[in-house]
Length: 159
Image (cartoon, rainbow, N blue to C red; front, side, top):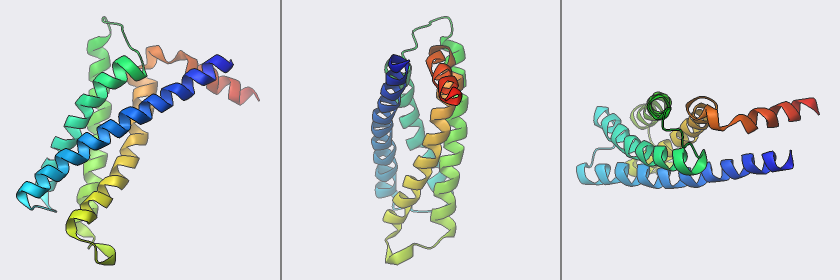
């Protein structure tokens, strides 16, 4: 039982590290697009955010599949990827909606620049999408590899 709890904690830590690398990719691409175009709000920002989020998702898929969730089942690869992509698309919609909504409809607070305001919106959006993505990846996309978590939850509920 202790081993299962450790594996779950280790998996969450790995997911966190992958998340940090995804966030770096996501923010770097978004800020590069903003910096080169000087566009800080509106419809173009949605496209920029989808592009940056997509780059992060590609990074996320490979690291989470092979390192975090250690999925090696080649027979299930197409199914896993389609589930992963579905979860990620919903995550992108959540992420982009928050970034667009805040940067377009809420004036920057505290005299912040438009660039900093977009990044603060992106931080909030990333946090919300992170929760969605972890739950979806863990319990649906890579479900076959996570039976230990079900046991952990069962054990916690018994106490």
